[in-house]
Image (cartoon, rainbow, N blue to C red; front, side):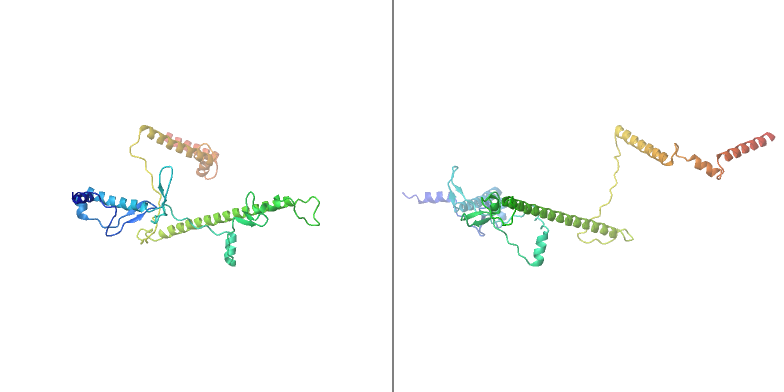
Length: 311
């Protein structure tokens, strides 16, 4: 029985696991991504959109799965797991690069003298123990003189000398000195940062002054690319329509403001009234006083009455 036709038809239904395209697919197993740089077939895309998208997605998934099967596999309770390699696709940073820190006092001195700073290792070889021990820390090499059971002292040393305590005091002094230098470096960097910010503010203020120093107040001046728009004071207006309660509150606030200004003026004048009566009398009487002004007023009234009686 010839079954070649049946096998050929069955094979035609099953797509090949090998993806062949004009431009090979870019597979990145580290990010589990596939990039297809082949141009879109406009006719197939327009005539059969769903089939075209499914075919393109199928090719990408097939290439990704084929790449995953080439990776080393490790057994686990949840089944075999593939060890993903490091990603090869560069991704943009979500935040800008950090600004470089200002150099410390020692770094500036080392740069001026040409001194190259060498990083000290955390481990150091102990000849007595014949092993690597920590340079610092709980059982560090720097505490060796503090914990050893015998110490060498000078011949002229005092009777109550304690070498272990002296070593501990010297170590504490070094730690305090390093901390003090660290704080001084931070304060020095902070001062430099504040000085730079103040310099930027001064430059912006000077630039704003020069931009409005022309005859047109900068209205017809040419603007350069990248110039910031000057910030002005925006006027705030109350809404045209307001509730009765809001109008009441605004009226009360206005009356309170006027009353406060009146009281302030009275307090500055030193009297109960806004008008300075003493100064007004002195001005009208031409410096002769209120008594002389009263006599003149009474005399003028009597003479006016006599002229009226003669009529």
